[in-house]
Image (tube, rainbow, N blue to C red; front, side, top):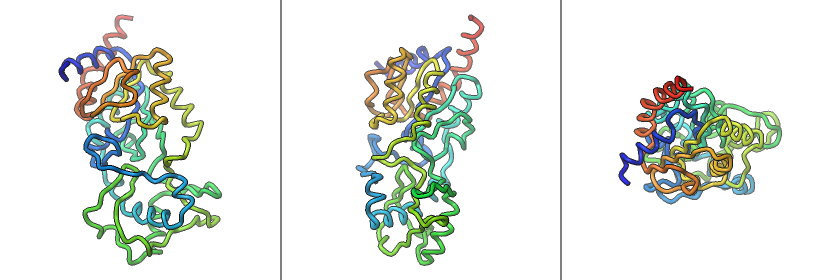
Length: 284
């Protein structure tokens, strides 16, 4: 089956339905943020929660790299895929977005009903007292503690999806503790080995229930935190469509799978689906 036929099947499946959308790192690659598992991605070993909390050297290395990487993510802009989903929400086609990304590009594009499943890169939380501060505030403190460390001078860095950066020479980096209690600070991001807060998971399940169909865009569904929503939709007999460059763990649940880029596909859907929804409403 050629890509044109697969796209036509995608439109036929989704036309006239209100959609819940589950997005992954593949949606943000066109904004310059690489994914972990795309077909062209280099091998990566994401940091686990246990490594971060249990190893001071590991934690110091992470914060030095994050001090570079978060600036890159802050400068990124939404791409056509993000903007298409915002338009589809405005048109009433999309009921909401569940994203596995932490880059906040959905919100920047104008999407209003967004569940940041794995947290957000722009906040930091104290693991002892729960105090939450902005990443910008922490950056100012880290600059003071590390006057000879110049993030803007680090060239040719490799950025990971969680706002981490691959750089060397981090042994002298000074890590900041919580200004309230002195406890350990951690990005407000769900690490590997850590669980998504239950209220957030329940809200995502409710969002899947609200839609007539589930559209997955740019996720390999490798981790259970995203795949469970596909299984939930399948158990409820909701149609599932997957748009991704490469196969996913959810393909067997999908009525339609399209191996394509998300920006061009979502942009095309944004032109077609609002009219189809209006037509379906007239016929009711």
